[in-house]
Length: 303
Figure 1 (tube, rainbow, N blue to C red):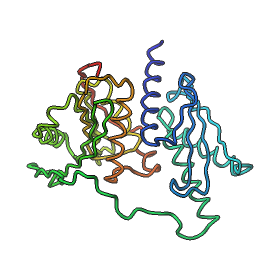
Figure 2 (spheres, rainbow, N blue to C red; figure 1 turned 30 degrees about the vertical axis):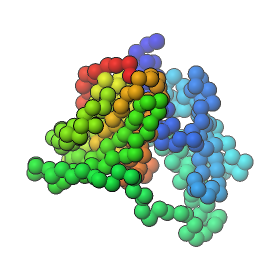
Figure 3 (tube, helix red, strand yellow; figure 1 turned 90 degrees about the horizontal axis):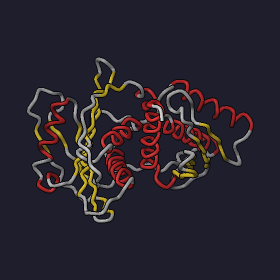
Figure 4 (cartoon, one colour; figure 1 turned 90 degrees about the vertical axis):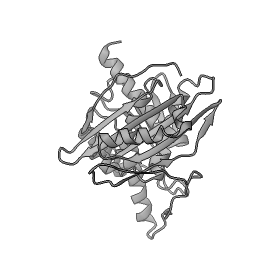
């Protein structure tokens, strides 16, 4: 396999894992080897009026030089409506050539379904959560920031733990606006003996540099090979900014294989959504392709 093909394959795998973490049961694997997937998209998850299934096949050249091959399946989607939606998806691809675009496609289709629902049934029928339910772990840690940065305090948020075959995963989140704060977050987290004793503490962060309009970002596997890059890829797709996520894993003696990446991404995605760090698809589109990456040597391990 050529080096370019290997790079595309890795980027595809990272995107697939991120999509599975974001959409859960709505994301379906049709043929893993052929890279064929289907996602069920609705205008409202709790009370769907309009639903469409997007089937995609990822060619070897995607995302570098070729778009996904796709099919839109819905009995009501005909004529000009189908043409308009197809044109919208192709426009998103053209605007983001070389980037992972499945998330943007799915959310564009969802926007179209929401607009269709509002047009056919006028009135505020969309259920909105006015307040997110708090997780069980309410005792958020506060760390005074001893620097001259605009953020005066770092608020830590902790997710509920996810167990699987004796391994436990838990995400921690903190707002950050400079690399120095990243070190402070890690130092504060490691003061907790339970977190310090974790087998792996995988982390990634993205800081938006307003003056350069670029992202300063980095990640760390902490021995869980390739986990940091996958976590950062998820954060890129969700276009989060000025935030750091640390996912701790306590290994229980049973190898989980690729499932460990699913748990890491799920933990991270849940806490980012809960704390309102995820942005709209339009903002995600603007954020793609403007990332400044700082790579580090990773410690490697089988578990």
